Length: 154
Ligand SMILES: [Zn+2]
Image 1 (cartoon, rainbow, N blue to C red):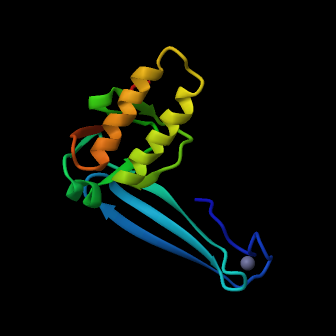
Image 2: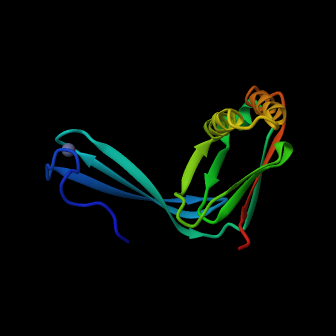
């Protein structure tokens, strides 16, 4: 696997450190977290790579503030995420990045996207606003949301 190494891309210092961390996520499989730290300018970043994804089909239900705090959502290349109650589907192409989200981080990203999207669409604005309203209530623990993550059929 190709990853970072050598001098810092920011300050060119060689005083850098790379760490690999393997995690077993019960619902997903094994992932590898690679993090980079420059001791000179303190630049840091990290990336996540799926190692062995055993996941085929996975569904979580958000019903309470506890669910929002404790559950995680995974964006996996070539998987699609469906928000069932609001009828939103997000497809990940094979070049997508693997990402781990908190529930509120994930939902807020979708709300931001919908708000941006509705600016350009005249006729569906009402419908989109309904979805936004629903998702905002999910964030307050007032509504239920089912999120399914499934391997895309292509
Ligand atoms: Zn540096």
